[in-house]
Length: 492
Image (cartoon, rainbow, N blue to C red; front, side, top):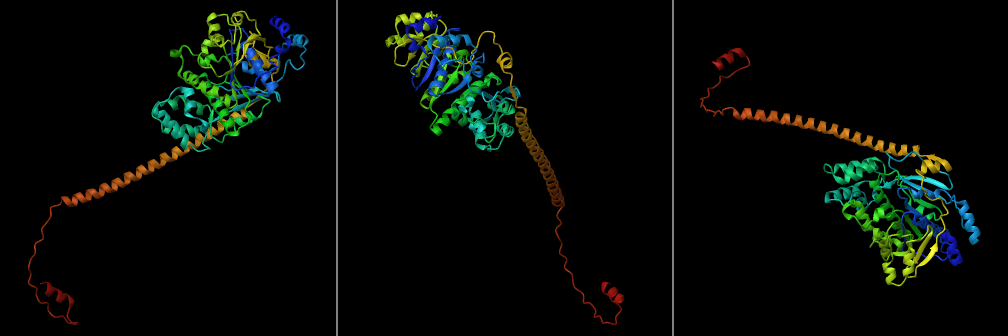
């Protein structure tokens, strides 16, 4: 066992890095499959949490959903018994962490029942306020956007009200979009229809400040019930919100962000076949890594340094090298360290034969040291685990919370807005019909007047003839004269 050999060499230094440095940058873990890089990363993060008070945000657990394993203490009782006996450790061993599972709500995928076993394990369904988005967030969902897409986003962003929910956001964007508008068809419509994007005042919106404030709880972002094409968007948005909140409050500066299988997002090769959002996310990584100054420190793992070459150089506080059998991988990982005289040829050769748990521990600017990392204090993935929910949670806990009432409320709000919109559209259509009828009546009246005028104008004009007449003197009339007689004589 590798641990026993190293204990004999230097027992005091072994115990999971008793003198951990305060982080100013990030940490990177490289090693082949089965080399222990992911368990080592989890163990080091736990030491920072337990011994130095760092808050843990677990952003991505990979295809194995390893982020969920925080829910259980380690089941390696025999291992921990041996560790305590061999190294006289009292504080190490299995630990039940307090865990907050955050599930972005996506109506067509998110189940109504989620793991819940307070106070240790809590689950929360959350939504994202549309008003909090930036166009860079949209890029991570659908790639770079056109000028017309940018106009639709900007105009919708600026003109919706705080209380406008997903249906009204959707309608506004649709009304100003042209046919098959990319940002509407591929981003706004699916995310509002599935109720992930909400109004600014929705009670389900994620409270980032509370997550930062709760230093003891491990916050876990659970993306397994969201389509893959939107996972980058959610991760990017979440990190941005953390950074904004830290800038605003100026406290809670010690935070670690875990991302397993990071090469899936940051791969520096095969650029021609990589989806555009991944290319954009890779470019944004350099900015994310600089968030160490704000107090956000990334812990990333990958099988080969070549996969992330050029993206992490100079930004790391810690470099952890596990077993690297390939000579090219060893060269990529150690070339600069060798030039700086921080690692020996013998240590480089050792990387090919390291046992699980053994690693080369390199603090920025310091010489490489061979160390042994204790297993995580939590459960960790093993072959055969399969689906976490059915094979582990149901077997070892089985408690769930039903969120149907909450999701029904979200659906009802959407339906209410939809009804309001349809009523307004029906009223507008009725008014349009009445207006059309009035216009038709007015036109008919105008047409009748025009016809009369035409008839009058079409008649031949008769020039009047002036006839000169000689007036005759009317006979004088007295009261006694017979009226008929007088009139006959006058007319005759």
